[in-house]
Each structure stands twice: as C-alpha cells, then as structure tokens.
Length: 205
Picture 1 (tube, rainbow, N blue to C red):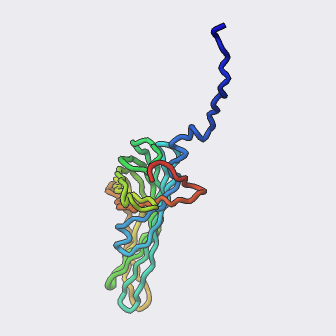
Picture 2 (tube, rainbow, N blue to C red):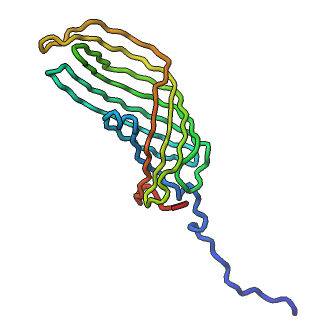
Picture 3 (cartoon, rainbow, N blue to C red):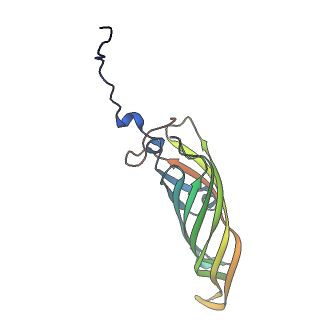
C-alpha cells in the first residue's frame, strides 16, 4: 500500500514557549520626583503594574528643617496614590507612552519665614491626571524612564496663620479653602530594577 504511518515524534509545546508579554514585563518600579529633589525635599515612590494597561503608583515626601534663631521653620509631609491607565499595551518592554489617571492626596505643612507662619494640619485633594513616559539611558544594564505628569483637581482643608513671639506661637486666624487648581506636577525618574522576585528580564534589553 502507498500509505505509511508517520512515526516522527510529536512536538510538545511547553508553557515556556507561550510566555505572554505580561509575564515578561517588569511588575515593579521605583520612582522619585526630580522637581521635589531640586527643592531639597526627599521623596520616593513605587509603582505596581497590575496588567497590560493598568498600574497603581504611591508616593511620599517628607522634610523637617528649622532655624529658631532666624525664625525659619519648614516642615512638609505629603502622600498620594494614583491609578493609571496606559494607552500602549504591555509588550514586554518598559512602560512608555501616554497614560491617564485618577489620584487622591493628603498634605501637612508648617512654614515660618521671618516672623510669620502658616500651618496646615490636614489638607486633602484629588483629581485626574495626564502623563507621558519615554525610555532614557537605553544602553545601561538597568532600565530607566522619564515620566512627565500633571494633575488638575480639588484641594481642600484649613490653614492657620501665626506669629512667633519669644518662644510662643500666637494664633492670628484660621482659614478654610476649597479650590479647583492644578494639584500635581511631576518630572519623575523611574527605575525598573532587575529583582527576580518582581521583574523578569524580558523584552528588549
């Protein structure tokens, strides 16, 4: 008979042959806002990539400086959380391109300059944001992007005005504010470390 039996071994397709871009792409990034760094305000953030389009970023900044002899006092604490949607799908490389988000933030501050002070115990805000990220230092072993982000939304809370007088702080007035203004501005350096627990080496090197 002309027909024969094909005895060639069947090729097995393993799960490693069909690894998705989502698995290869980094899941965790570390961030710092260069605008705050330039103002000598230490800040750090993390971003977790949930799937091909969504990520969640959280940031915190804190500084406490004082010079009692010259009535200089500068204290600032802020934290915010943002959910982002990236237009460009996860393709196994770094997160780049346009993104939109919604965020919420909390602020505390105490500023005193030349005998006049302003204190905000609990200020809060939130809004919507737009940003764009692109890759920098492509030849480095580790991977970096620069992320520009701006947000517009609500800022509420109270602030107190006071005058320092011989070691005491004399209250002058308390004011409440409800504002719709730009509440976020970031020029952020983003680093994707090659930590095996979070980020696998995939996509373009």
